[in-house]
Length: 372
Image 1 (tube, rainbow, N blue to C red):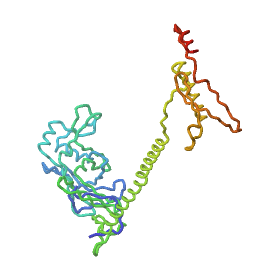
Image 2: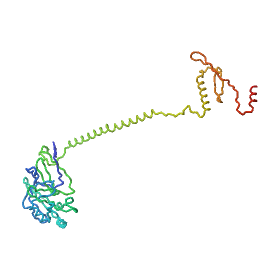
Image 3: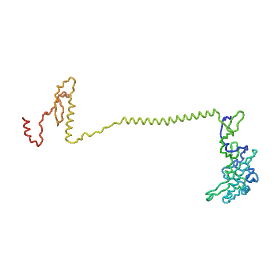
Image 4: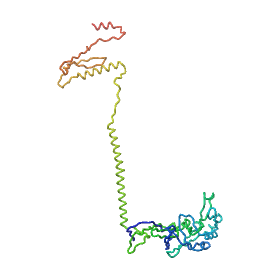
């Protein structure tokens, strides 16, 4: 089991996406064409013809869409696939009839790659479907036109394997060690993904007795896994505390303030009973009666003597005075002000002459009877 002591990951690759091989390439001395390979041969599977007259060195560039080959090689492709060069578009076009023929033939093209730094070769096979592309507006008017992504190179500096080639090739590059590998793509849908990191050359890893290759996969130790788990739990705890302090507590404080504010408002509110204006009376007659009653009540309140339990009731001379049919109890007593002087209260006689209404014919008789 590998134990990584220190690591700097430069990149990685998925081993499930390609068929591995043992051929490695070193970067070219020219930085502009550092990822270059030797093409030993190009073979058509349907006729087993060699499409390359001599080996060539070719640059791999995924930013270029087509494959650029020498003109003499392009002539062999014309004969093998029946494609036609269009000088206006600078492309090889394929009509519908030829397209149906190529589909029926199911022809593939095999690129045989080799390396000066490693023995052996790598075969990358491209089916016709990898070359079956279409042009559309604004390059051509409708309907779309089929074309074959092959371009005529004028010199060796234009030899290029572009994105058409990378449809079936998997490239892994290590820029620190300046080497790379090219493999056939694996289209097995059941293959399990396995990512392998490319570690820096400064990374040291230990096994039982040997130093593992930086391109080999590594596993974390139990201690590292425990440390990561504890660190993650600590981060979650800190995040929970921060959330509680800054979110939950503040929300509770706002709610408490709202409750206290509502309680204060309820405590200070009073029910104010609406009163009628004391100066409003139904009519003048009622006004006089009410004012006279209020005057008598005030006098009673001012003149009510202090009565003790031992004071005899006979001490007070109480009379009943009738004012407009309203009976009031009046008490004759002496009042002494602060200076000691007595204040006399005068009352009108309780018996008054009875008024005779207008129109009473017995007025005189009644008056005489009163006098007698």
